[in-house]
Amino acid sequence: MSVTIKSKSDLLKLREAGRVAACALEYAGKIIHPGMTTKQLDKSIHDYIVGCGAVPTFLGYGGFPASACISINDEVIHGIPSPKRIIHEGDVVSVDVGATLNGFVGDTAYTFAVGNISQEAADLLKVTQDSLYAAIAVAKEGARLGDVSHTVEDYCASRGYGIVRNYCGHGIGHEMHEDPEVPNFGKPGHGMRLRRGMTFCIEPMINGRGDDVRVLRDGWTVVTKSGSLAAHFEHEIAVTQDEPLILTRP
Image (cartoon, rainbow, N blue to C red):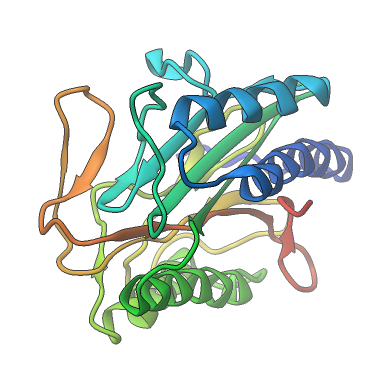
């Protein structure tokens, strides 16, 4: 495993890329509405990123055909935007965005509530997002990677939710996916020791029921096997000598 330690200059550039991704995601949250297609939302995100002088990282990545992953309800991640897929009142919509600027990548995700959603959905979104911030809080210099992973697992599993184990967070820098892998489950006190200058994405992917997922025939879209709702939140962070630094803030 080869983990790249970032310089102060690198972190400034990562923060710039992260800000573009975060602002694009914030913009998506402002314009998403019932009746909109996921393709329309994707185009708006694409145009926003390009308008900031950045490149949509996801477009063409591994053959992915769009600039954002847009996943609805029981879709966990990697939903392909389509002119036929309409967003409805009461949906929960996960939007995952990447932006490359000056050779560095920003990557962030948020699950939006469209209009009035069920209490069940609202609870899932809150717990998933809260688990992200709980995990970020422990990502300090000297901690272990397992401490971060275990925090997500403990926070969500103790409340009865399923933990997606097939996919995970990741290191990030010049490339979107670098070492180390950052699972959403693990043992405290185990794994790599966190060092100042490490940058990675923490991204809880949590199911309403059960851990298991499957990939649809499009080869990308990951859905819950139980048919339950899913939520996905992600921030890119840097380990510092003090508190963890969130690089993906608007």
